[in-house]
Figure 1 (cartoon, rainbow, N blue to C red):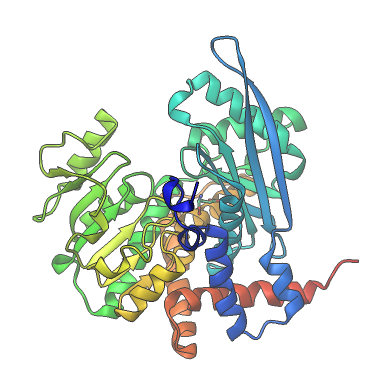
Figure 2 (cartoon, helix red, strand yellow):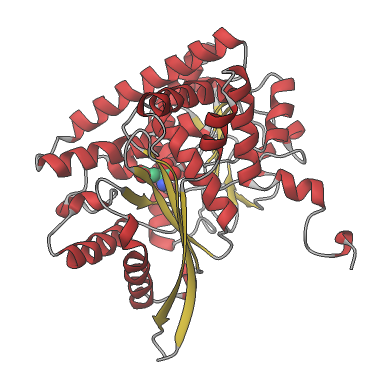
Length: 428
Ligand code: GLU
């Protein structure tokens, strides 16, 4: 069968959609500008360690199903690996590799003392009961135990995982090491060592970088229409906070469809509706439209906050926004970025724009290790300091090299990791 007749995209397009290739491309551009030597370049391009595990799980009907999971540790020069775990039917090793590397660069951009890691479990959580999810999570934790730990690798929530998942991981790990070890994961419930403000942190970080980028563009929230792809922990919280700042949120979406109201959505009502109904469909204050084309709706600010590969060679020329702030990891392919660049669209890259989550994860890890917990005001004001300072250092770097903000962010990130790498030297 020829490629054109399968469901697979043609080869060039398939490569465009490989997140690890995207990451390598972004890394290469900055490594060239930094004139990074071949050896360091090779080290930083590859993950340090990859673990694939098979996990038998007892289903509610008494049968056994074997699941596959991954944990990739990209780099731990600057500290323990840090990064989420996602549960998704189509998660694959190249995706987890890319996400792990993006975590290294993200932690470095905001200058928190972690390297990058990421986990993935191939499953469809919608088809699993709570008991099955718990058994799968505990078995996954036990299978990757040897490489986890507060000083080794500290997971957190990502797509389809949440505070409950983190509580199970924390408990399973603690049972094995025979002591309560809260700092082995972040994004936990507050009652068991979670941080105030962690749940909202990624969305809050997105709101803060929007504010900084808008200042640079000389725009006011009141005249800014915003389209948000996604309505979860990043998109939903981000949209709510931006609404509170006076922006006009004209569209938000979930996996089934999108709401659209050119006059602006009543975001608190949308979020209440979503909480009560589990989806956006049926909300009365807006039209309900297909997801296809949502990113091309008229707006000034576009926030892709769902998943990878959303702005590509196929649609980038139809994006109407003048500012794109990446809430998701890897939503823009290199080709998509080139097209946006040529059209003068400012893109605040994922490794900066969505770094609020991991920043407060760092605060959570610090609080767990101190056994002393901060107020929400302290968490939020420290988060603000980190986001504003990081935004400024990325802009400064981009201006110095006359490159876009993505390459500016990679320059900041790779330079920091490479310096540490050289300082530590090569262990032999
Ligand atoms: N999954 C989130 C991310 O992609 C959070 C990671 C963390 O807090 O460790 O940044």
